Image (cartoon, rainbow, N blue to C red; front, top):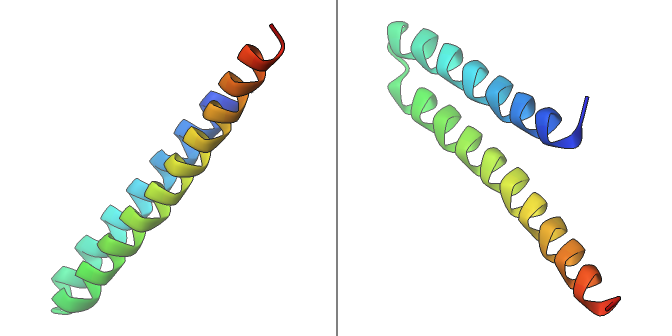
Length: 67
């Protein structure tokens, strides 16, 4: 499996888990914790995306440095 698919699956798993946890918490009346779960998932996905963008810029820099 390529790195791109791995990252997409990782983001999808975090999103699905956050959605399920959030809906379960909302049904049990814990709206504040459900909101925290959603925000935590967004921060986690943002960290993964920023990390991958950083790797992309390093690869682009290496391509242009070798010419």
